[in-house]
Image 1 (cartoon, rainbow, N blue to C red):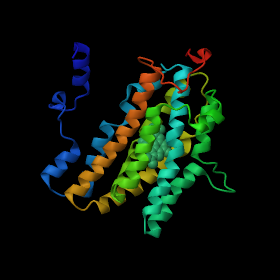
Image 2 (cartoon, rainbow, N blue to C red):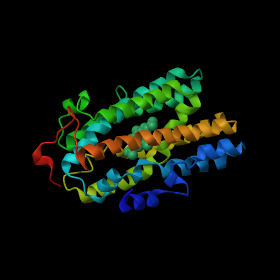
Image 3 (cartoon, protein in one colour):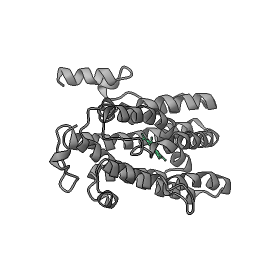
Length: 282
Ligand SMILES: O=C(O)c1cc(C(=O)O)c2c(n1)C(=O)C(=O)c1cc(C(=O)O)[nH]c1-2
């Protein structure tokens, strides 16, 4: 490993053992200890393990918040992230369909309405608002909606989220949504940074994020209460932490793919979005 690479590993390694690639995760610790955590301990374990791996720490997000992305890179982010946004209500419908409990379904269906909107309602839904964001960044929304120009890795990552909630236990499906514990932090950093550092971005462009600031904590609180109730053995508590880490990996992989294609080394896969030259400035 080069000195720089070694330094990077050391910088990001939370504890000894990472350099050999065998550091146990928080889920491994819980499984090994075999002791049922209290609800407060479980919440602390989820928050700590999840936040450590949350996409807020990814270099692509750091560049974005520092004002260092070109408009083309911002477009690539919005276009790829549309795949995630458009998938969220479908994955929530899968979770809904798996439950026998009407009270659960009543609460969970709010998530679908948040993203798909509602008839005769002011609420046009998050998916439409994301398209407005894409349009505000200069993208053709018809092209964005086809998802054909998204990176292959984006589509695989999003598919993995669907697999996780389809084939895992309900505990895993619900726990995987707990990245929403941290999304208000990501949004709270991102929105002011974007408004301050990119002169072509307006409050209107970023309207998607406004309702998320109350929807995400509501959703996370509900999911956390369910996880706390359902994870009644150390193994199930570990499964919940693992589900959250898998979800963090999905979000991280999407940004890795963006970074590789549009920042360094800049290898855009065949068929993927190629920004017009005019957009490659700041
Ligand atoms: O902007 C972000 O960083 C961010 C992150 C996440 C997340 O952590 O999964 C979500 C969202 N936004 C979001 O807008 C959203 O609707 C959402 C739904 C979910 C989910 O897993 O059900 N995560 C997220």
